[in-house]
Image (tube, rainbow, N blue to C red):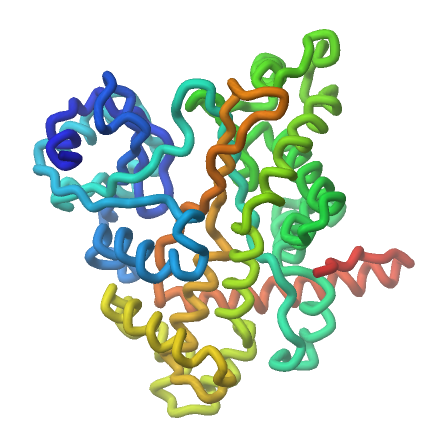
Length: 425
């Protein structure tokens, strides 16, 4: 039924929603049908060969989510996905419609294109579109500090007192020629804390980043009835109306004069996140799958045969779906074993999966017709594709760059008589 509905739909009935490194997401916007409330993910392919590209994408998407991700996060926290076969002409039609509408940026078009030979699409829940829907997307990022046990002395104090996101933000600010004070003060550990006050601090920081970047930062994005909201006067007024804020309290609204609106937004978002187990499950999965930190993992692998070094394993083929299913069974059976007793590839795949959880997004969906508080209809994780094994060495190199730059910043601040705030798990 679904396959027939997708194949018989018109390309013009699918509207562009988002685009990532591997997929283009389109939402159904046609007349009422079994597809109402659904979106499709179209796989992309590089215009030039890419050694890090995975194979059997759609099968990995669907079964990887159902059989590897869902057991760790819980099925209710993961969007449903179905693999639907389609003809090449259908994919060509979608590609052509997007081209005419100018959906994809010139930069994206220069790098990759819709894979019209994929033979299928992935049908999934649409968390963004719908009538009377306020959708909030958050990239929570890393939610834990590493254990000092496996860290070398040179980085131990830095990594156990400052979270990865805050350190990376500092490096990005430095590279952009901004002062260290310009680094984002959103700390993921506040959001993951479970404490309403600290979670509120995190939401305030996310809001400030949203305003400061004119909505371009991807740590917080807002959608109302499928349209992305930006921190301009008109969209702030639309958000205020959706949150049922009386006009006498909301006006006049501007990016720099929206404290009451931000607080009302926070009053809805924090309870929604607190009542869901998703953040705690994400935090637990990130930490349990990365017990060594990339430095500890590299050191352990270096003590084993050369074929099991980080650089050697990063040159091995991308794990297949079968590899991931075998890993899942092995990981479940060996949860009580110390990392040193686990096979090298098992540890590497666990690290890659932790990286997926560190980089995913969560969607909080509200029904704006409910009163007095908006009803939460979904809190789910998305963007849970497996990371390329070829990136292992890049992960290590980036980690070293981040820590060395932050250690230098700590020294400079200390010499100036200042203090850099620590991150509290």
